[in-house]
Image (tube, rainbow, N blue to C red; front, side):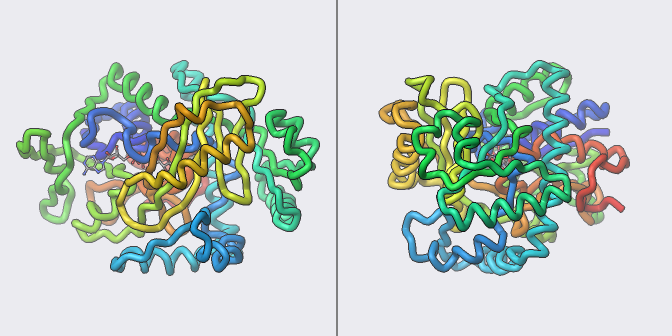
Length: 419
Ligand SMILES: Cc1cc2nc3c(=O)[nH]c(=O)nc-3n(C[C@H](O)[C@H](O)[C@H](O)COP(=O)(O)OP(=O)(O)OC[C@H]3O[C@@H](n4cnc5c(N)ncnc54)[C@H](O)[C@@H]3O)c2cc1C
């Protein structure tokens, strides 16, 4: 079967890889000059199966009034004259209820686990390198009341198979010695020992290279302008080359993996998917003092700043800005991130050589991605991975390949078009 994959982010590349492994003739169309230059470029790097709480949760609802008044709040709403934004926001608030949050969390954890195991198997098969580290992820609290709530939730969730170890401040400091200097400020932490960290951009580029050597065709510099629909079926896509030339490319199946830009393309053929761009920032600092630098994934729960150690670099990310598709960098926020990194890991990174980045999380209100068949024959989707697209990339690729092969993926998840 011929399959067009639209978009070469970490989701498109993983999907192409697993579809090719299923014996298909796969062609990837990407508007940029290489893979993973958009949302997958400089994310937090956490492959977090067990600590992937959706932003839509009861605690967000509780803190929202305070956050709306703070210019440096982790969640920011920039109102726009956009029905899509307002609709998304209402649906997001609905997902904050305890029953919906709990259901979403279990789905995310199950799928994250399946995806992490798929990533490990791929690593063993290919030897792919992407500055990964298998040391777990520690989420620490400085507010005792928030820590008590998180600890109670962790104990409750253990019954559902979510492995979250509740740690006191001494344990936190021994799990990550780089935090020892501030142990008095730590109320406690939740540790997920089996999670890991790695560079999604390096991963996607390396996997694209391996995929090309196994017969996947990657066409860069090609912007998809529209889907070709004939007699109610999608038959491929019309693209525009860098020189303005247009071309129609046909295929048996077309898989949309255009991340934050998926909703518009799908709306053009009458499909509504509530995927909204939620902007975040990251800073990357070269390590200058090994002894002061973190080794594992760290999240500061109060400020929602996530850190990873990626080889000889420290990556810090924050902010969920519900605005629009604007990718400008807020220098103030990024400088605050650098200062945060210096406070937590004094002397570890070089602030003078920090690089700044902004990216859009392709987010559904529940943070659950949309993976599977649409109601339009010939059209598949792998979109809306929000805050956990890197964590879920390999699972998403493997699952869509199963769905194309008419097999039920080996994980319980609300896939689209799968009975
Ligand atoms: C600040 C931040 C921190 C994050 N931290 C983490 C983390 O720690 N762990 C985690 O699991 N996830 C994290 N994420 C989320 C993760 O990065 C995303 O969910 C993931 O990168 C989405 O991948 P994607 O392939 O769907 O989208 P993208 O990477 O954006 O890929 C989509 C591709 O489609 C292409 N495209 C779009 N439109 C067209 C068109 N018309 N024609 C051709 N090509 C097109 C784009 O150029 C792009 O290459 C973070 C995100 C942000 C912003």
